[in-house]
Image 1: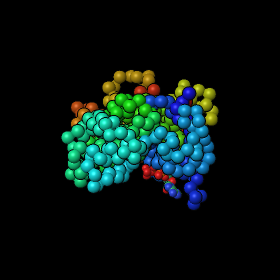
Image 2 (image 1 turned 180 degrees about the horizontal axis):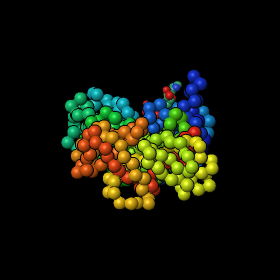
Image 3 (image 1 turned 60 degrees about the vertical axis):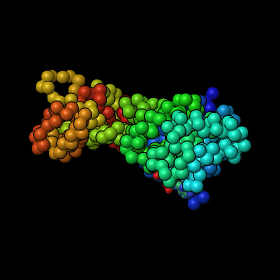
Image 4 (image 1 turned 135 degrees about the vertical axis):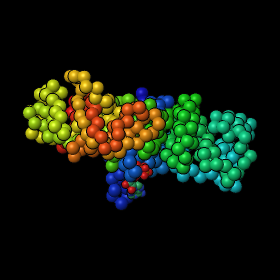
Length: 362
Ligand code: ATP
């Protein structure tokens, strides 16, 4: 049985705003779940309902099979790290880490033992006597994480814990948090609006938009099999290219280049002929056109507007007729600006979405 169960969870704030709609999820012991989505989509609200800091308006929340809607935060065995971590400024790192254990009445030897162990995991051993003001932002963030993981709990909740760090520190802390997660064996729910964090850390990702869950899946599933345009565009950097095209005689055409959809759409072709579909392809799906005849490729060309050399690859911004797209190319294959660039997309890497519902057409 799942360790945590969220069944049709809803949040309606006192002002009537419906922030979370019918959220369903089962979380196993030891799983690392990431809630991802743009600002305001309801990630923090859901996390706070799980923590017991916010009432659940409708739905059931179960811990280990027991209805926990009415349980207080302590009873839930959950520990939370907030975005704006508050350390006690007048206490040393040691005392900051020990604070929660002191409150619980844990004996001194045990506190010392656990503080030392936590400090070791987080690389804070040399800083235990320091005051927070004498630490870097990254070190303070570690103390905040440490205050959470020092407690022996079944679930860790983390709300954008890396938001105050610079790019390099984020990368380091990302792997540290996943490692700590593995060592503790607890379930972790991690909230972020950063799709890279979601992709690199999660066992499963929950993609949210405007209070609704859009898709739940492993990083591979949400990347390779997005359910709709929103998920396809949110996961992946640079985002997937989308082009709205009318279907005529079972074909779509971009800049005069045709792609036959009859095989792809099968019987659904009747439904789409004369209507629009959204054609999607990822920047990294393109390959230079080598001139060979290929049955299973969609050949395209366009005008190169701008290129960005990033080191291991380059972004190419181009216009295919009226459609603006981005391609990712190898650094030795960067086309000249203002030139015409010919490329191919393998047809199995072309996604089709219903233009009205924005759902994927399989
Ligand atoms: P962010 O990434 O910006 O933290 P989020 O996805 O965590 O966003 P929430 O903080 O869960 O989003 O907020 C979801 C929605 O609920 C937002 O539109 C927000 O304005 C609204 N909201 C949050 N708290 C309240 C409240 N106390 N009363 C009314 N509406 C609220």
